[in-house]
Image: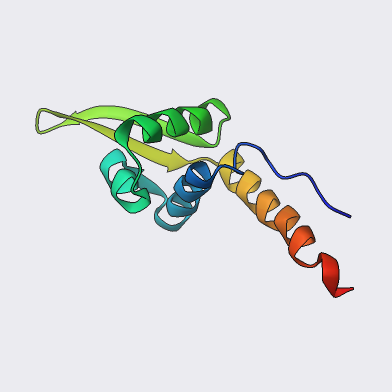
Length: 97
C-alpha cells in the first residue's frame, strides 16, 4: 500500500532545491540560497548529494571575475521527483478508501 520514498528527496532542503529547479530549469547558487534561506555551507552539501545522485548538473564558471555556480535539473532528477510525488500520494490517500 505504501510506496518507498526516495531518501535523497525526502530531505526538506533537497526537496526544495529540486522543486525550485523544476520551475526555473536552472538557477544560480545565490538564488537557491536566497529562496531556501539555507546557509551557503549546508546548501553546498545538499547540492553535492543531489549531484552525486545524478539529479542535478552543476556548472562552475566565472562571470565578471566572480565565481558562479549554476544548477540544472537532469532528466533523472525530474523522473525521481515525479516518482517521489506519486509515492507520497499513496500516503496522503491512505485513509480515503
